[in-house]
Image (cartoon, rainbow, N blue to C red; front, side):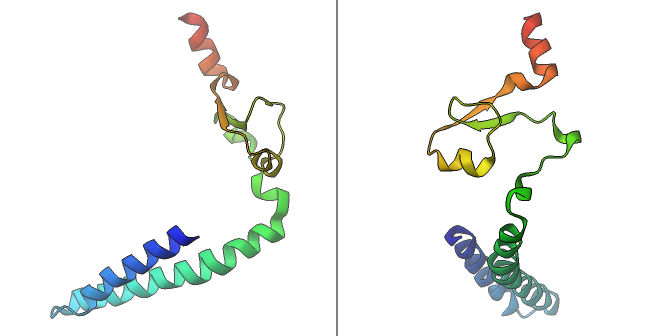
Length: 111
């Protein structure tokens, strides 16, 4: 959260510099973008996103069936499909299993 807030502060300052320009279009752009970034960092990322994640619980980590082609990312040696919060709580290094994709497995067999 600190990185997002820091980046938002920097961007608001940069867009604020545009707002002090003598050219009207730059003033409008600076104020508009500065307000948009400020609202995004405070309301959306600071309030709505954590509240939504709390309400959704395990459903945050749902992966639609049409995205099953993506590589499976697991934490540690256990690749049995533990839920994301359990895997994160294990404090092990993440491991990307590229063999879960049918295409990659067939390409590896050809070589």
